[in-house]
Image 1: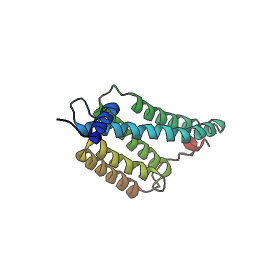
Image 2: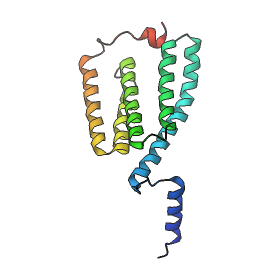
Image 3: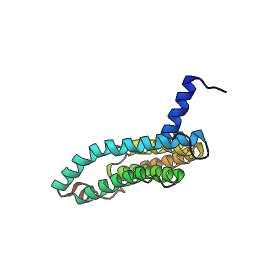
Length: 167
């Protein structure tokens, strides 16, 4: 049976981009493709943000900031490059890293900071890469995390100025 030109081109693109996983599960292949794209974007755009932050923190002697942002950047870079690790494990590790970044940001900057955005991305990407069940679990974790931070308020947080600001 002969395929049309459009379908032939589509199948060629799928083979070239390796959008089908080993067991011909189309969903799994697309998830890997999008996962790699998301983490590549995070590493590239994060690098643009990381470099001036790193240099500024070095000049001001803010060693805690240098360490924190370097570890976060290396983590994202590692998740992107460790392609021999099974996709599901990479996805769990990568998505968990987003949760930890959100948690650290909430801890340092409070509820007014960007931690809420990281937590939102955590839920969204958990659902996209790992399925609805994982997405709902991530959403529940976000609700509990936000409730904890809102309930305990800002008064319980330690003073991060020495670590984060180098004072």
